[in-house]
Image (tube, rainbow, N blue to C red; front, side, top):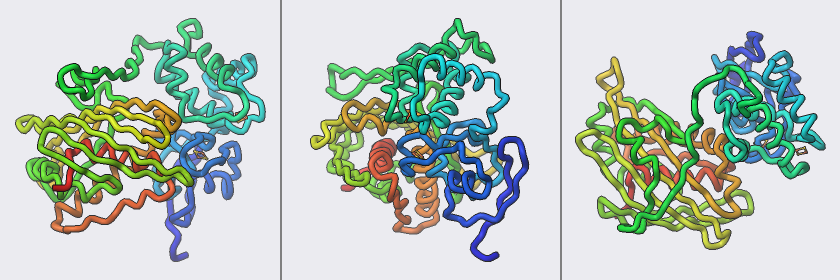
Length: 380
Ligand code: FES
Ligand code: FES
């Protein structure tokens, strides 16, 4: 039927082929035709985490993920973990520690919790709290949930697979005495690579230009600015940047105003942005260290790879939008949109299309601002 797109994917171990309307969310598609109603939907804006499922081994918000974008993917919902030993232990821990009341958030909590205990075995309670930050619960006050997840993640919990992997520390930011700007521990890590150790890391392939041209494009402040929506750059002198990002999330309006430093390593085609911003209305502040590097795309003379890493810390009432897995999902989409616009720019189109972040509002545009800062954009 016209307008429908055929997709083939694996859902809870079963091969599924279906014709899907392009704007159907993964959550709706799982719940309606597949009757996998363990995936709950609450905010439908990527904020609460109730709809979290695993896609290709990573937790994603199924309410803001198109079903068609999962063509070829491996999707696992809460129903797919019935026989999973780690999930079994988490279920018992939630029950033992009173980690649920109405249970609406619980499927998303459990899917996220399983990812945490397998990815960060041995992590402490504060890391559990941070990692669970993208899953909201209106009933429990979180104490029982955190206790449950911590008990399974703890060394005594002997979660499998056991690993000597030490969770990376949470980012800590300190004012640099000399500049007043941020100094983040990620600085040392990015000396060798962008993505290792970064809280968030994304890579995109930009087609239609080689790495030399892409690096030059990103150095053209005004042109690169047109690839990201939402930000206003008041000043950019090649080393420091100042501006603001207007934000709207439903009824919430915010304007993050801030500045930062920009360091570009021309020889290695790497750059680092450190900055902070604040929204006076909500009294929320944000600090970030963003790094990127441009590489040749192996096997292609007409494509280049852009690798982005980001550490951040948000303080204040809007901090809920900084929850790590939520940010990860949104940054991934944002980077894809940014990549598309960069490709358009490389193709000589003067006005790349707007990403149109619409419903993702606040966080989406806040991240656009952070990434705009990342590439050192500005308007002269
Ligand atoms: S329903 Fe998807 S994040 Fe809230
Ligand atoms: S148990 Fe009710 S929302 Fe979490």
